[in-house]
Length: 195
Image (cartoon, one colour):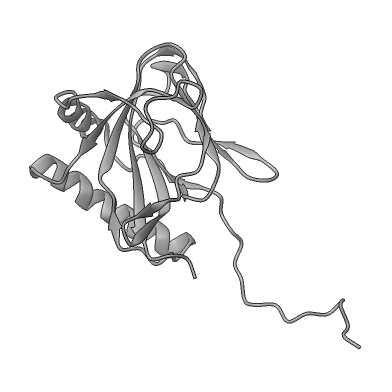
């Protein structure tokens, strides 16, 4: 007869639903990124390959390719931060940063309802998500990044220059914008399927 009260447990660590680095980027670096992004052509955001659906998402986006000195600098700095955070907390098998998304919430009510980021990117999967805050937290109201677990909702760090990280399989949303404008860089780090 098997004793169901005893078990052989694997060596595990406490799982962190999200972590952040405050002041990862200076005010000057944030302004440099915003100035660069202000020249990009914005489109209304879509969910997956569907046309915009205001019940799920309402904001504007542009894609930041690695094509010049500014974007190359940004990708390089993010790579260092991602490597540090992943080594410290999750140890996911990661290969590359997907094309960065500049996201702008500038109309009252702009939001992004609960969703997951995990999806395949060719032969890889989004595994680690991040959001870089480009504005002073008192320059807008609402528009909070909320990371949801089974037991709690966490409000991500809003300080300018902070970057929030969380596994792409965690449910999250951005609450409606109530006042001002929120600019951020959103990204996903990809790797082979979880095993």
